[in-house]
Image (cartoon, rainbow, N blue to C red; front, side):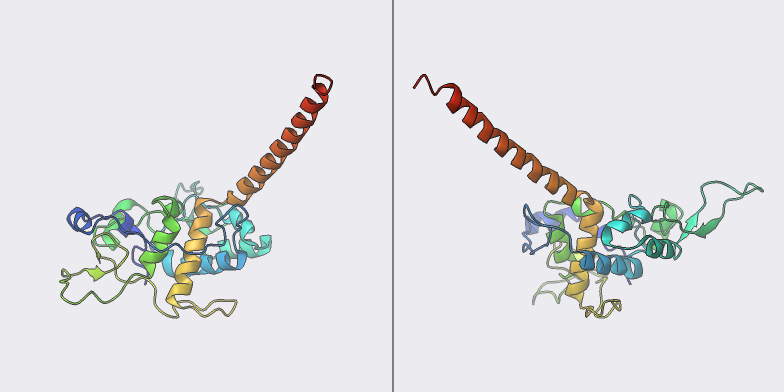
Length: 250
């Protein structure tokens, strides 16, 4: 159901893009925006579910380890159980010198759904499904773009001719994209009972991919605030020392 959810980022139709010009996408109210913004853990967990059930058949998260999911609010036991739902190729051969697959461990990284690039292309009409770990960082305002792309499948405007095998997408340069809509209403059954609309799933999986791209965002913001508070306090001390030092002169 999810065929190349973001391979389109790398498939660029130059002629159509030049004609359409740069596209602007509506800014969404993401929870992590702003100085005090943080990730919504419930949203990240829903996004992980969308990735697992819809996207993982084509796309890898090769820079994300299962143990990293503790940041999403999962327990170690829950992560251990989740990792076991993936088949991972063992790095070391067995005693007979043969490689084998085994259930995932918390120390493993999300495995690729294909053994190599050639197999991936063969299964996707020659296109290579990209790794999604850093996908939100691949474009300016990447979260807004990704959300717009996932929700941009519509009927083409009257009079617009769509090439054979292409689909209309309002967010894609040139508006013609080979990938069909990856999200359908009710594609997943959220464990928290949230209604799985296309917009909800697009929002959740985008948030999850924003976290995979910047898992340390909250730590960086916290450190930045501490540094600013320190500099402010230091400035106050310097001003007080200056006034005391020059008090007799004035």
